[in-house]
Length: 441
Ligand code: NAD
Image (cartoon, rainbow, N blue to C red; front, side, top):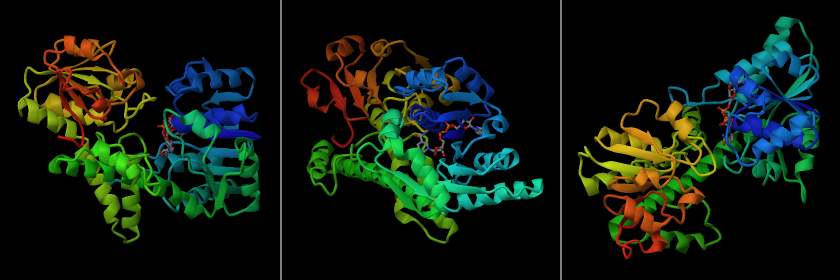
């Protein structure tokens, strides 16, 4: 099948590459010339495990192309994905300007019937707006070309995006024509090895499914963080409570790890957007609002523990930070708790020495660009030199079982703040550390 994917970010690039892996002819389009130039030269602009070899292989095989020219790409396309960003607008709702700009460009350039697929996370009713935008442009062109608009939200996880896409739990398709359903079934069929996991529904339900899924996951995280905060007050251990409740199959172990709060490009903005969608329809989403409030506070819990230990004024103190990305396996720093913790500590006069296996460039160029008193180190042990404490913020594998003797030797004082509860089984107090974690005093 001839496929065009518009927007070559985490979602577009992964989706396009995986479709090409299944033998489709895929063209990934982006307005960012620099990004497309890099891709054409075999330089992959994002870090995602397994992505680079798959791109290089499919480019070589003549299945995967990159361009800034939508008009060329769309000529003989059968399915056109919209995979551009839907960032948080000023009022918290999803900003649809990129999606609608793409819809307009599709209307201007399409030359035959296409199935237009919303893969971006978009509020309920967006497919109608995309449809109206394309139709408006076609009318201006005096064209009677047919098209379909489909909702196909993406559920991949950064850090495991390729395997999630290649072996999906489910593929949600919202459409209102048999033609569109058939095209989508044909496109996704190769991804269903053992059983067909395509879930067909109406467009609005598909759009809502994505928000409901992310809100549910964010709710589990905030719920556990709230339990952890209560555990600290009452003298319980959230790590034990986690195992105690997770063993109930109705609850399950996933997404109930106490920590420094959720971040990333999706949960924060999607939770906010869902709250806004409800508001627009006259409903106050109380639970969703609380999920957000708990998380906003949770991102600062580690900084508060540092202040409690070292005092309000951190002038002259140096902290070594392990982890900047919002989670392991990615260079993505959008809404990462590290941004909040580092800014809070620096504001109080501290100096920061940070290391992350993949996200340092992102931090330097964008998310921590203007932060003073922040230096980046080349290795995890380098950040500890002359530091007054180590703070773990992202649970990269290489931080999970470190050499505690080495840590102790490098630090000024043997103190660890563990924002991901990775070290509680190592009996750090017995090793001479002061150890602070989430959900246990
Ligand atoms: P991203 O910011 O990494 O990529 C978006 C890309 O779109 C950028 O490269 C940008 O240059 C390009 N773009 C913007 N306007 C364009 C235009 N007019 N024409 C062509 N290209 C254009 O975003 P992302 O993380 O891939 O997210 C895309 C969408 O998918 C969002 O709605 C997001 O919520 C959703 N989503 C993201 C994830 C994730 O883990 N990142 C998972 C599921 C769903």
